[in-house]
Amino acid sequence: MSTPEQAAPAPVAVPSPRADFLRRFLSGDLGFLRVIIILVLIWAIFYSQNTRFLSSQNLTNLVLQIAAVGLISVGVVLVLLLGEIDLSVGAVSGLCAAIMAVFQVKHGWNPYLAIAAGVLAGTLIGLLQGSVFAYIGVPAFVVTLAGLLAWQGALLYVLGDTGTINITNSKIVGLANTFYSETTSWIIGVVVIVLFAGGNLWGYRRRVAAGLADQALGPIMFRIGVVAAAVIVAIAIFTSDRGLPLAALILVAFVGGFQYIVSRTRYGRHIFAVGGNIEAARRAGINIATIRVTVFALAATMSAIGGIMGASRLLAVNQSSGGSDLLLLAIAGPVIAGTSLFGGRGSVWTALLGALVIGSISNGMDLLALASSVKFMVTGGVLAAAVIVDALARRSRQAAGRV
Image 1: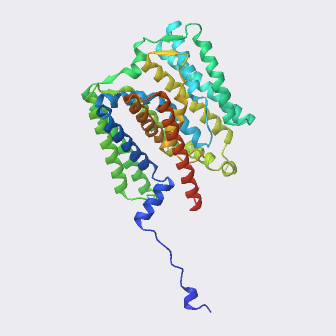
Image 2: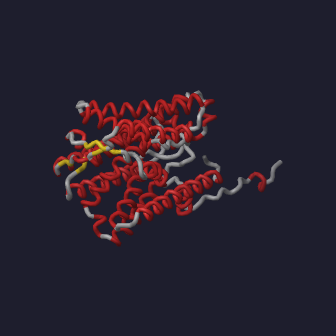
Image 3: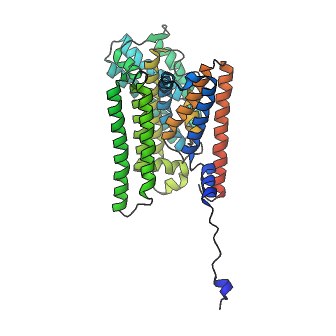
């Protein structure tokens, strides 16, 4: 017969709200908050050095500068969720932009067909690289490193002796140089807020009806309020300069669309499963090869779209398109914003937030006229710090018994 002392349950230590918040913050569960804090600090530092940094004109330019990188980063996020890396995204973006430019400028194709050809080229490249990785078993690092070199060579071949192709077609140029009027901008902003609020409330209602609601309505309303405030502030900034850029809408649309795919569809859950534990995913009946091939195809497709957006902003494609620090920025952004290099953890929104962080650093250093050597060292240091934080957060989660 057990004694009262033996029968009494052991006391369970309940962490204080402050301690729990700090634990979640350090372990990466509140990654978005960490990124917002970093972004605010960056903006405050550069504003203290140059007040033009937060001017409506410079912030509009910042959005235009990060549009191409952000679009490429959307595909990079998908690859990172698998726990893999794609080193060819920069070269693919340059090659596909060159294909689009050659067809439209040199061969007189309809601009929309030329854009479609460039995007299709990216998809085919992704299918090729993904198939070599998934079916032959060559590591993704090696496959895409070979692609980095091969597609750079293909870019030079496509451009030919001219080296540079200037883009003048209004449809292509308009992708990065179209600005909506104040009235249209506010209408679009209201539509975005209504759609976001409606989607969240409808999803909550469905979970309640199914008996699956696991949270109160308050946090959802808070999230809607934060997004609404962000949209209102952004529209106010844009309309005080040239108006709402089409490039910003394209970037947000792709980010939102892919976020829905990875968070609300079976395909998205399979990506997380493969990235989180490939053996468990295989035993669950998930077709690993198909997921890998399609993810690399989507990543290359987004690289092509980003490359075309970059060509639209610069009004040209040349031998350096897709080069320089584009690859570094496309990968660094999502990692800085919280997508794990170890796979199975992250959000497509990190493509946008990361592009804002890395783009703000680059834009601010340009305003301060810092040397290129300093820019590369600072950007590399920020990326190294983000990777260290990611590794420490992963260790913290493992110590707590979570993946």
